[in-house]
Image 1 (cartoon, rainbow, N blue to C red):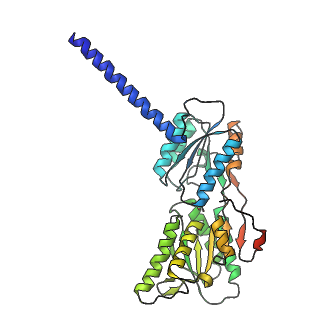
Image 2 (image 1 turned 135 degrees about the vertical axis):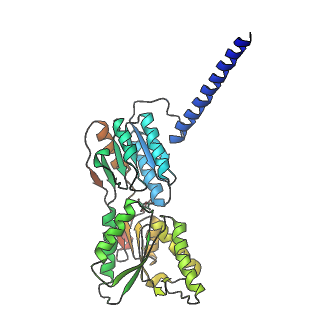
Image 3 (image 1 turned 120 degrees about the vertical axis):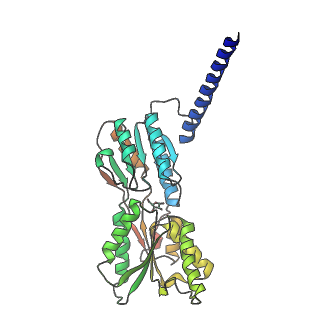
Length: 346
Ligand code: AHR
């Protein structure tokens, strides 16, 4: 009697463990795309790991991929990594377990992807890099789709060189960059320096990361303002670094640029004499350009969705894709005919 009771208890406990485990596993898959994908249909499945929603650009990029997936009848297993590489690694591993057809991801930083990509390769799942490059063996991924960040940096530098063509005096530059160790920051910095380094009058007197966030752009500017206020030398004609007037701000994205403009408004800084160059071209920064608050905005095109779905279909049918697919991008400047501008949509 006692042993029968014991067996019943063990069976009960085991069943409880199985039920609880199944519950958590189903929750896990539910979290990936917001709906239960247990039932595989005939559509292609793309596992997509996005880094987060740090800027309007990023939100539009995610939206573009979702819209294109729907238009192409491709199912998405989505994960938002909340700016953490470890979350991206987890998401990619879950895509492998789920046996998606293709994996695409935006690598937040350049390093640390080899192992997970090897796992995807061993599972026979092709991988597409979106928006950012990585340092890894090229055989571990099928190709890259996104912007040419090196060229974006060069375009920013070219605008500055042309704008200051007739100027002889020293020009002090503040650089506000984005996520550390990301390819996009490295390349934008490189491209910009490649162009301005040819003329010794250009000096980058300070370079600091603002993590691509509006709040950080504002904070960086406010810290500089605070220092000049503390030293009793506050002037409202520009930002100052170590008592040197900043003539140019090169900001790696619009969110940070708009943050800088927020702080200018708060402290009554007149930005008209500061040359401000930004990257992305979201509507708010184009509006600031038209208002005369910015001088140049280099477009970083977030609308990679349609192109991504084309690459997904090619890979799914066993074909190769180009190693690199760049997306078209333009430059908006203070010299444009603003009447020709169209709504940016983000
Ligand atoms: O990787 C692209 C950059 O990331 C965009 O310039 C920026 O806005 C985004 O957050």
